[in-house]
Image (cartoon, rainbow over all chains, first blue to last red; front, top):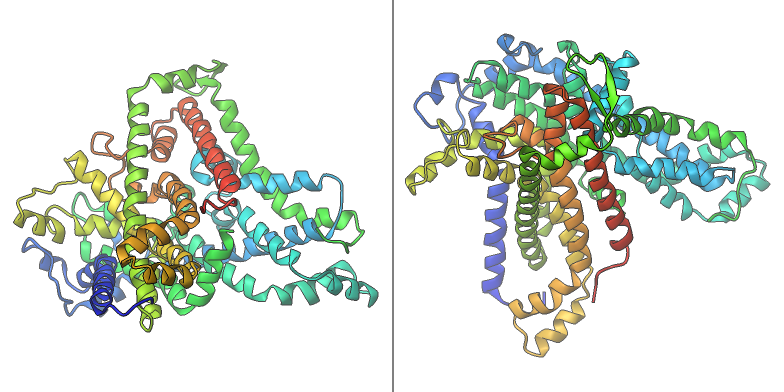
Length: 282
Length: 292
């Protein structure tokens, strides 16, 4: 702060409070709606304070769901989302860290070509090549499987670049010392590189978990069996299902449940989250 | 570049194999297929295909629906970017003034990043629901009859708000980081010379913030063009009357629902061109700092 201007400080606080209120508004409304019954909406507008049906609505969604919409219980869908998010996050980290290791610590023919192949994935988001990718996954028989949900999303240029940056800052002396002590490349990787990149892995994990959990288009396309529905893609089916009149209190309860895990991760691991966000964008 | 390396020749390929295999099978091959299909035309039953040169692209160029989609995408991307960045910058500047409570505010503002775009869409769809939503009720008081199911403008405004809301936390974090990297001495010097807070903001803070702003501009355009698919699909599904049918949604709709493979593939190729251009801009110019 440059000078003391109480008026401006007050204005800053007011702006922030208003901003926080605007940002929180949709979630508050959803929360309130999820604690009422369907009849409470009949009056024309939704109530602005929570009602007494919180436990009832959430318990019903978690272990029964809405049978008319053809979606499984939200508990099942959340488990599917969790499996998909973990597979994507761990898979991306595993294949990126080994790729970065290969690119930084070895000289081999076609090294640049391999690097460019990985780089080019940045330019091909799933939305722009959706039809042929779907075709490939269908031909491989991966529809309605956890492998189909996760593997096509695992390739990652950003994660590879991140680990490459990290490895480039690790002093050569460490490698020399390891080699003098007789360590082979894999031992060096396991005992030196992995421990040194631990916080980067954790930060990346937070970002990738959110990325995986929030996938929408891909799970929507490749899951036709309700056993594999994920919660984010399932909400849409639920809001659509009952002709014209979704059961809003239940849809909103599902929406709250769908955002709970990633939001908890962001708030609980804020420091790692910010680190991951800033690093992956470099 | 490392001076000390390992000499194995086979090992690096084994290490790269999973990434390269996935890249090839799920990225390069489908992309090549899209390019190939964009030059072909399938008959209605998918039995025979023939090479038609650039006619799929010409058809796009002559299609009023596609041109409309281009225009909608441009308007949508600009509105999302301006709204989200403007609001975030305001909040970031405000947080920069508060000292003790800044981390509390940051916590209260970062979590929308974690909300899935589809969920964000559903939340705003509910708030603006013409029969039971809060916003139409409020708007009715001031005399505006909100209906995103029939009004094209209302539908577009709805998806813009939902998409911009989701992006606020991202922009906010980067603006705060950008503001903190501006040396306080510059603003102090300006204050001593008699410049007020508003003048300091426009003459010092904003120009020095331009690398961050430019970076966010590219990121937000990419976000609005490609990551908002879920917002559209969960809410308006491109309607009413194509008013929110952005390019990525149209590719999906023409390919999966309309089964028009040639046209969908040609649209994919156009989109790839756009992503490649944006990526090149990001890597070539964002690095070079737009500061004065």
